[in-house]
Image (cartoon, rainbow, N blue to C red; front, side):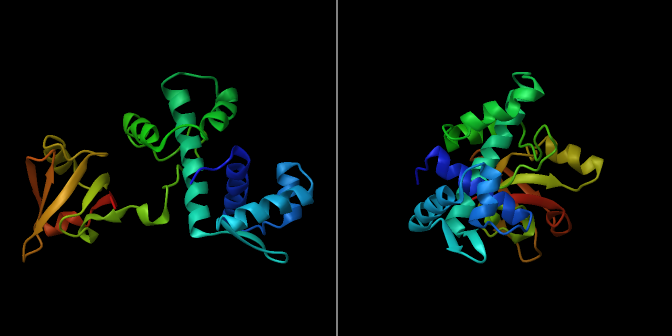
Length: 215
């Protein structure tokens, strides 16, 4: 769904307010966005017609599942852009926010994934704020939750140094993508990457590895 810059900004404001457990009433949003309440109500009507929010005068606006997804994606893009501008382009901290604010609305999802990968899949932006998943269902899970035939991206490996070194040499690195091919009766799992590299993990190790499922 294509959003205007203004529509995206309103979704982000509501998303932040929900996280802070503040009612996104027309007046509260107007105060944050520095506009008049009737302007906010007009935007609430647009977003409601797009099925991105639900609005009730007393409880305020709440994001629908689609609205939450789009708001989360914009915030993720913003924080990844700030990280890229700071780490790669060495831009001054004082201008990171304004530059990211402009770019977040025009950068494609594909380019954002490439930037994410290039940066090593950072979890926080330069200000220490967490970089959210694009959707709640993409939160990390332990590897033993993945089903055969499903792909995943490695997120965390709570393993000792010797095991980490072993797996690093076999491409099982943070950010690498694998497919779970088989689970044996004794819970040994076999995974595959790049179409040819197999790796086996024991049942006691899979619960120590966190991954992000690909759907």
